[in-house]
Image 1 (cartoon, each protein chain N blue to C red):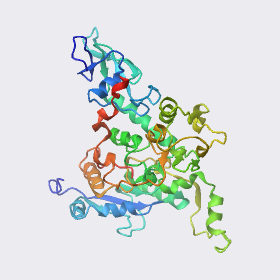
Image 2 (image 1 turned 90 degrees about the vertical axis):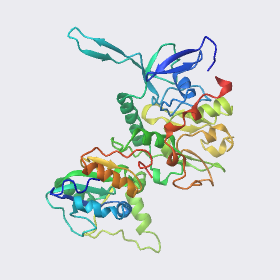
Image 3 (image 1 turned 30 degrees about the horizontal axis):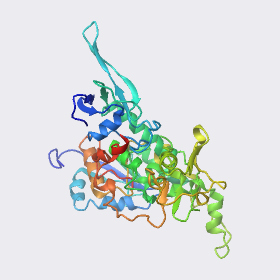
Image 4 (image 1 turned 90 degrees about the horizontal axis):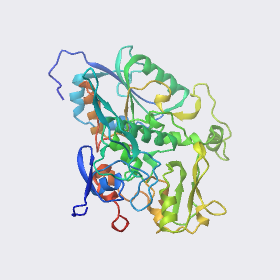
Length: 185
Length: 259
């Protein structure tokens, strides 16, 4: 990466979040290892589990979102990202086709909640505290809710794939992974 | 390839490909080591022509208009698995237009079924996945169907997960043509078309399918799976971890005795 050729450039603001995901994609992001030092020359993190900033700045350049949309809060967060980020990247299988959480889509949500919370020995109340985000009937991929600009598949995508993808994007190229880096699992 | 004077040839992406009388375009191409993407084609069975992944353009022309502009008139599109090769034909396969169309076909298959690769034991050796990798499918593009489909675990050795069926009919053809058992069929039309087992109960366990049957070993995706053999090959060593699907075309070439 040509990290230092155009030094005075403004650092790009990058926000990240995990919706109905497992944080595996964030863990994989950290698998870029010491290359994060090169990356941080080019970007600064805005809202992200890495910074613990709770809301996006209004001028984020890139939003990286892992996980699909499974509850009402996910929808709000996703809209916040779309509103504040110029480019949205769906990262990982769940954000792209719902992934493993979406395997509940063939089941009735009432049956699922009853099976988990209203079985003998597990209590009889399905949690309904207003602070708990309401589950959606189905888990949705991100692109069914907002416009997504780029997709990075994998469960999770490898650190190398994330690195190649981001460096392509930061260099102004259309990200291209090629054999070995493109993976659906 | 015969070495007599009667060897004929056509052109695939401007490369000369020899063929024998009666060979289809895809048979000749694969024999010559040229990969044409395909899903429902299998060298041992009658061509089916349904997946359309192997679509090529034949005999495109370039004309010069009166004002001197060069215009390309696209040739006819045809499934290369059902179209006989003809001498001097000009066939295009590896063009941006056809790759785009193939990518769209793969995306439509991916949203139609429930293809959750991380939990599928066929992952890494699945033809649909391998094709998607090769074509650079980064997103499903279309809304997911999330179709509701069953699994059938009634057979002692073989499991059916209909969530991943792409209706290629390879198992149907294998069972009818090779095993002579007619275990599988397609039923319904259009959106409701689906794979069924030909037993009174409709269950695989009540058919005479054996795990060694061709039909039990031909599924390109993760529908027909052998019990107790899941995830045997570790991540990183599976077929499409090591080489892209397009790397080994001869594997799909016609078997000798059937040419």
